[in-house]
Amino acid sequence: MAKTNNKTDAKSMKGTVISTKEGLSKAITDFLKQAFEKNCFDTILIPVKVPANDSYAWVLLKDPALLDDANPLAPIMPVQGGKALSSILKHGVTDSSIAAVIRPCEMKAAIELYKLKQVKLDNITLITMDCPGVLPLKDWFKNPDEGEKKFKDIIKKWDDKDVRPLCQICDKFSVPLNEENATYPDLHFGVLGCSDGTGFVIPGSSKGEEILDTVGLTATKEVDKWESKVNEVTTQKRKKRSEAHKALNKEVGGSKNLPVAFALCINCHNCMRVCPVCYCQHCYFDSEALNKPPEVHLMRAAQKGSLLFKPDCLLFQVGRMSHMTLSCVSCGTCEDACPMSIKVGQVFSMVADQSQDAFNYQAGRSKDVPHPLRVFEDEQELDQVVTMCKDILETGEHK
Amino acid sequence: MSEGFEPRIVGFFCKWCTYAGADLAGTSRLQYPPNVLPIRVMCSSRVDPVFLLTAYLRGADAVLIGGCHPGDCHYIEGNYYTRRRVALLKNIFETLKLDTERLRLSWISASEGPRFAKVITEYTENTKKIGPNPAKNKIFI
Image (cartoon, rainbow over all chains, first blue to last red; front, side, top):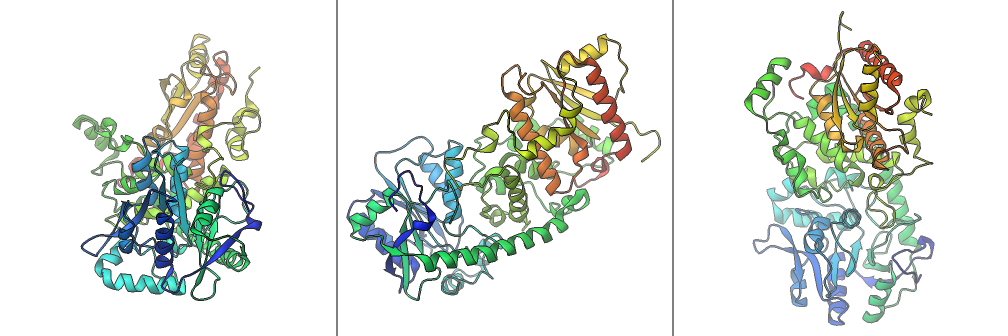
């Protein structure tokens, strides 16, 4: 399956078998240790348990001994990995190579940020794994020890009942199979469909193969079982996703329901700050543009009969959608960060699915497909775009 | 709809085409409804979808964005980007079941005074038909 520039034909995917008897996390860290010793990379970006034992944080590791505290499959996601990666590599590449051990949605965010010129991925080895989801932060902080146990169970049974609502309906929990142009992680750890205690390491690029070679493994095993299980779960999740979105649409759609859905919003902008693809240094909604002198508020109140304070909550939500919906990777970090438990992530993912469909685009799927708003097509515009302008173009008397 | 309802339409017009087209309509003494509040922008691509949203959510009965015909942009390609952005906003409106009829993008060149008058007349008529923007009196918007 030797291909360059991260592209592979999904059908020819091969992997090497590893033991996951002590759990997938341990298998990944063991592998990383070996690769570290063989100098496959200089540093590793990975979630590590904080000293208080109640949370996880991204750490750039130089010392392989510290890998004992690391957990590539952390039960929670307080900071999205794409955002962590961007904060390291926003201003250029380093000579030393970094292995980023992130989840599939975090890799998608990293790719979006790469296209938006917010991260440089030249010297990065992307390592992902089949992801069962993460626990909602609110549940986790009730009892972290319990959460840790619960999450072990979730990995074992691949049961999505207690993970974040968006993780429950995530159909991109593994690598994209049978998709053209898709960008693959350099290495992927697959456990779905494998018999107990085993898993696959699947290289997705020549870089990944080299690392496997250096460690002394070769990717020669067929991964059919894993592939068919991934496809099966993907189909299930897609169905669940469209049903969930349909129900949500009924709940929040319409000019009556939408303000109700966001009525609890306290305008804290947490969702925007944690969003991996909301990259602007100065957000329009934080700017002085929306801070008006009292006369303006009084005028608006007089016109309307009443005015909500702080005003423009809905403008913030829908406005943010119009800025980032095409890059939204449906990770659900926004929903975790919302102090008012608004279904913000679910609404955004519903809108994102629709808009990305309309532009025939999937956020984070491919490094090579440009972001729809950064390009245009002259002659053959997208259907959706042309339909939008049709009534105008037909009656136009131009020339 | 209420009797005698006069819609208020916020228009973002590109300086090189639509705004000049509006000028031409005026100097040619063409009659069109006075319901549009024109805002001149240097290019239709200067209009962030958030501007359209702001107007809509703060109670404008309709929003119009006017630019040069595709291929005629003073800045070569600005209006192509506008087209995509407005299509995206329209898609978001559709998903959230908001009034897409209150959004419109029109290409009107500097020589199309009559077309400017026609677009404004039609759009005003249509907005009168669908009635006032429900967001106007909602507190929680």
